[in-house]
Length: 552
Image (tube, rainbow, N blue to C red; front, side):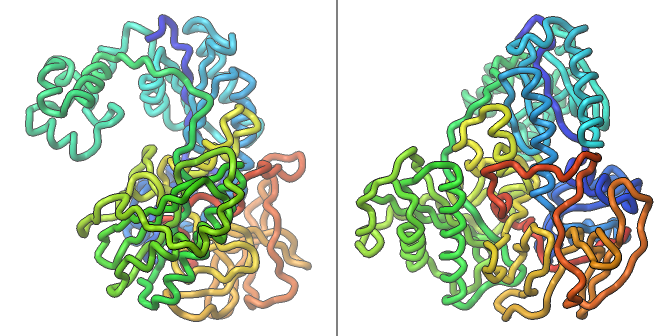
């Protein structure tokens, strides 16, 4: 613990939804929900107006539609979110060399390391100035927490939401934490909360009074010791600007379970190629190929194969993934597929071409088969993906968080490719340019038409994703409000204009074209961070699906 509140935690307010409201004047002050629009999609972010109806991040999209049927439902535009995130992270990088991005919209900053603050007064001044700068540069709001530790700074930013600033002065943390629920502390999820409740502990004060020995008895040494320290307000974790990646992976969830073995194999090969593109973008190679299969009953199998040396060869990874698939029974149907690479290195073994045809013996299960159960999603940082912890679903938009900020804060490039992301919901699934969509819940994030698919169907009519940027030869810039039955509805407006008019066209109208996003604040187009993966974060059950349309 520090003697001054010089650790800052920034959390942008309802980030994805706020960006969409800033870009679309007709949605300001109205409920906006961003996420996967397919039958198996989940909510990535809900605006504060939508939260009044009970909509929350990680909620199934079908439930959100029941709670807020008249909200605007949009697919994520990760290119836009990254560009806005880059500007925010640039501001943080000016405060200190120690910036630890947690996601596109969240980061810790060590103000003391940058000489920006040395006591409570200077820290508060820095926080207020940061909030003003963010609003000026992006037009958005962020909440700031300041404290002597990372845990307390994050709690402070939560208390500050929305659009506020809270400072926890050292020495006051015990009194602040005491009445809070045990879920306030990092590492306490629903299962631990219930276990503690049965032991008569519901508040942080209860944990502090129970003592370390009792918590160790209940939860085990590692968890018990750390939980007791946090209950006393102690957290000595430093702000770390660089992280080592453990794996790189991508995955897709399908609107309709796949039964055709040929189609399943094709999807695995496509995922393997996407994974290698992400691996190469990070300047890394890997030695272990991992396949993740979630079946129709939600049971999840993870299989891995270790090669003789690290590789970034798409043929090697693709064929290894195909061999792993051969050992998995997909008879009942496949809900999700993922391919990952772990055992990362900074070099490649040039003599690996023989492995593409060699009979390499798989390692066997990298994780045990999980019984039927709900898809795991949450609103905090979770490990996930085809590599790493088996069966854990990533949450939207957080997996590639560090991609957008590498050049600014000096984060290790491999960390950007690591698929350990914060929630909000694995919303990727975009095929490379020119490649047919997977026919499931994955949809391209980019603004443009793609063939509509469904499960194992053949791609059909041209499709425009809700929220995508477009430009009409006559009416100018706008965004897709909805599409279907051969028609697309577009609202023509710009971030700095009044709410615009709505017009409907044929989906194949030659005068209607995809467009680059307009800047939220004047000054020309916002830059797309160099070196980022254009396909967005790895897919999951929150992957954008069939167009549900926006209802501003």
